[in-house]
Amino acid sequence: MPKLKTKSGVKKRFKITATGRIKAGVAGKRHRLMSHNAKYIRQNRGTKVMSDADTKIIKLFMPYA
Image 1 (cartoon, rainbow, N blue to C red):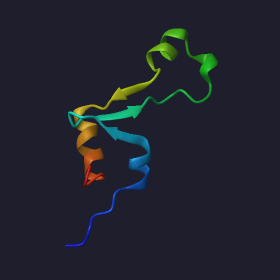
Image 2: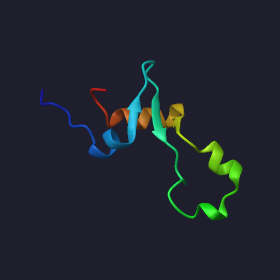
Image 3: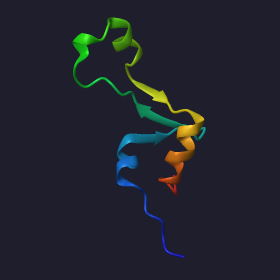
């Protein structure tokens, strides 16, 4: 069997935790932040753990992770 390729966009954007969940940066933090309130900016700081539905899709693109 040939080796499966990992999607290069996925390996740049996601990391797998020790328990097998997927961690990603939060969207909406690049520009146009003046129109968002302080609570939105504060809660979207750092990274988030992806939902189970998104995790299934992302793991298809990372065959050896």
